[in-house]
Picture 1 (cartoon, rainbow, N blue to C red):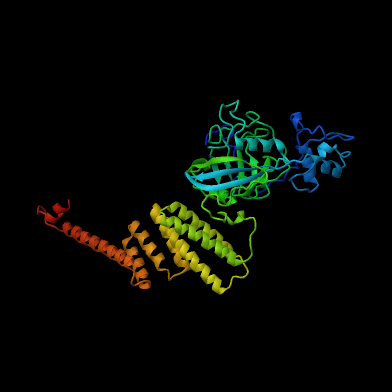
Picture 2: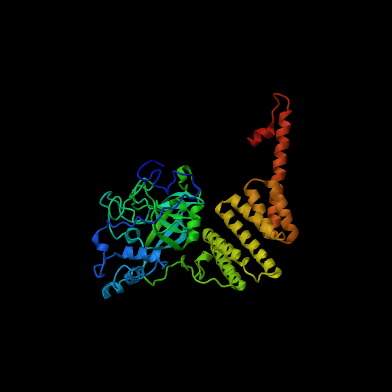
Length: 467
């Protein structure tokens, strides 16, 4: 990746090793007071001083209050900062906005990320991100490019660390522009990179924030005091994980487009759009972690598995193999949760393994249709690990071997399938075709061997005919 404003340090502090040991954390004392007066709540008066909403939020954090909807009254009175504010100020509470990003991987829709912005702690930084999600600020004065995340990509991905995007001007990590101009200051370092899903500003040094951001996929305490945390992923962490696992090339750049195809702000109280995101009637979110409530009954989870599998089968019948594969993956995610439930007994365990084997077999069929031959073979192998008596899994395994030109292995797979389903005409046809290929190959080998010992100058009519 080229060097520039976001070349080396523009990724989250990558001058150090990717997973360095945590360094001593600085105290979050850089609570700047150099911002414009519009953030001062003029309605808040006291016998000593006037504080801004941001300062009130910082006091709230110190006192152990939550980040959401903390009022000036609480901050001033609890910390002893003065008399109670005027009624207008007491009523003013900072609401943390929610934003969304719809993500495609290689042109295929993956899902929605929903983010809560900590406007109560870092209002200036949160407002920059919110406005870049809506695109409401129009065109940037510095670059002439739209101040909008829509259409931009995640340009750098480091597994086990973070995913980075937001370069709305250059697209490669060397650009970016904020709604305040090319750069703006570090607001404060109150919030920490304390867990996965934290949203933080990428920079090229102190006070060089623009539009680039990153989402952590693990705890990254070595970034504390260097990058401003201003939000967190509240839904769609599974989509972030999908981004994290895309293949990358030079400079950790994804080898397929990871694009923000739509983004915006969610109105207060509005549905976040995660459930039934694909508008197919599916009542379960794609990722179990996005459920509002997680029932303990294993029967509920098994029902969710069967629902996702049924949607996958319907899509397969419609020859929409990508949609079918997406549903089968979803079914496996819900099935994995079943094993965590206490009421799993031997009978339920056997049923789950059988269901998993069926789903993997169906997934193998999808991948065969989509040309992912090695993936199809792998899924068939996994299906047989769960249930050795799965004739269809042997059949898909054989088809994958045929496509990969491993005919001998295919014959063995079809033989196993036929032993389990001796009357299946499809298996018989595939086995016969595979045996014929072996016979043809051996015939060609015999002819080639014969030509090696043919006397010089003697005509080989069969060779001439083959040519």
